[in-house]
Image (cartoon, rainbow, N blue to C red):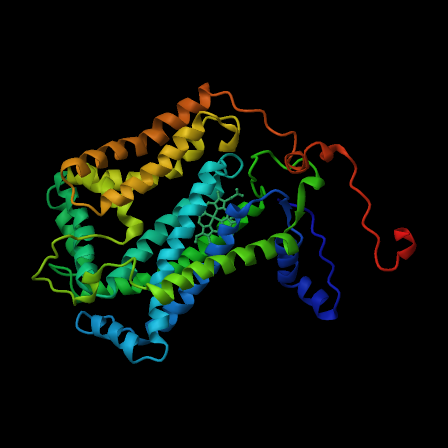
Length: 430
Ligand code: HEM
């Protein structure tokens, strides 16, 4: 929330820097005393978790890059060398690979949180759009990172995904093929392709970091939404970010790290495909080409549509539709907790995404194909029909009068109680 600065530099250096580059002022105003709704629950800790994960991915990635060899002949062996010969290399590589999965767990929860509590609604549309842009960049970055291992799944995933551009041939003959060969840097996926994927995989996290800064800036203009969706009305509705939410976010990061460590130290390969331990072989296609788990729902949508071009449009549309969510939702109120009809559709949407994830890993025939199509239809119907229509016809439940009232109930109207007696106030105890 835009609020007047309360920063008072105390030291001589503090005053000097404040008139030249007031960075301490920004930290103080935006991250220490920042007025934050008093009722944020644990779903609001995922933004902090994501920031932590982004930094961790960048740190482990930069050190991995010191040992990685981005050539078709050297890539696979260099990854194995990192695992076996480089000091702590196994930890670096597994932390980066499992970290990518944990990053997606966090970003999916963060996005569903936004959807559930209507955090995309005015005045937070730009904040939301920047979030969707980050999601797109994360998908591109993860895809490129996976290709770098240059195992069988890496190689064939790159072949399948880059080949999708050839669907443009059905619009303008030759356009798609030309584009694909331009991306490949040759007539097949090979060394030049790997080189460009490596270059972009190194670049994009810095772009993500830049967009995250804009995302947080766009958050700090209107301030946080909250579980009731009711706007902040008085100062009593907020508490300073530090120490209340800095402690809560820190605690959540520790819990998240425990789950991360359990995967990392006990089952580091659980979420990846064993075929990626076979070096890339352009002459042998694996029986099933399966992407990483976080792409499976999108992969299921791609395969549910019986036309290559429309399949690609469907897959991209599944994310693109998120950009216009602020204008598709016609509800007067934000939080799904107070929306008796929409709530059911929301949870069915969550089930749909999980089901699409499961179906993306199955061969697309028989009942799998049938359900893949049914869930794909629901996925788009949720955004394009249910959001606009239910918002118009539903009568929401009564909202609390204020954020404070939602926390304290009837006590909210009483004046704040005096502070408890301090150690110097002994007679007050008698
Ligand atoms: C690298 C990825 C991301 C990072 C580091 C990040 C960071 C943050 C942080 C620190 C917050 C404030 C704390 C919180 O509300 O959890 C936040 C809020 C928010 N983010 Fe993200 N975010 C990311 C991705 C996304 C994505 C993909 C979306 C949606 C598509 C999104 C939508 C939002 C929204 C709507 C809010 C406001 C929440 C509210 O106040 O109700 N973010 N983000």
